[in-house]
Length: 278
Image 1: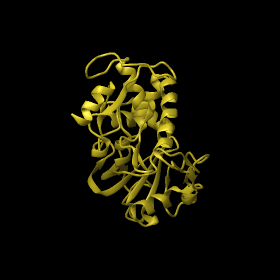
Image 2 (image 1 turned 30 degrees about the horizontal axis):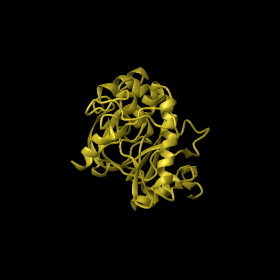
Image 3 (image 1 turned 90 degrees about the vertical axis):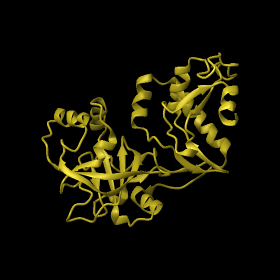
Image 4 (image 1 turned 135 degrees about the horizontal axis):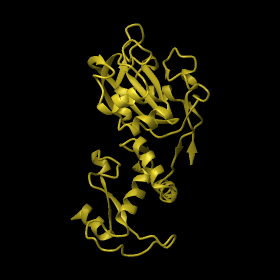
């Protein structure tokens, strides 16, 4: 397998989407804040789309270079890249956000502040989910722009490019075994933070990097029975004696279906083939 050394995240994102480096912002949400946000019923998107006016977080600050792309880091992994389309409306951090986000702000003792709600578009990035390094020991600095003191020190881990589809499948199998052996609470926690659209890598053909936690949750939900015909799995896997079922996406990933538990179903091989070819 081939791999490259660590590369500045901002540079990779700028090159991927063809925007100037000066128009990229790196935004790191603290792990503790995200935990409280999710517990309140909020979302990372809501947390990202509304920002206090003329603060360091204001993507269109009148005295700063406008931000075109925001790379959002959650728990030191790239959560996603969002394109700033403009200001949707203005108000306060309470009037522009969901009730869940308001509960989150109240729990933190944050009063309403003048704010902008931005229109933002999630972008499909090849670097989603990769570990991010360079923010260690800098917990109070949540934003980095091109003029920041360590903007180009924020880098993604070495990227591994599978040589062929069998390598990609082997990596998924390893992640799946780890996901199946983990606790339901930890899988749900990761699922809440996982990008809904999978990262794509180039192998012999294009393939989706599927979320092992989604597969694990669906297989455990099925309990060894096909979720279509309700028949028991036709056989057991040789390696671990688990019931053999295949996880199928109701809306195909190739058709921009989400890699989520809600969009997946566990099928016996016959039903799976019927879904694809009947």
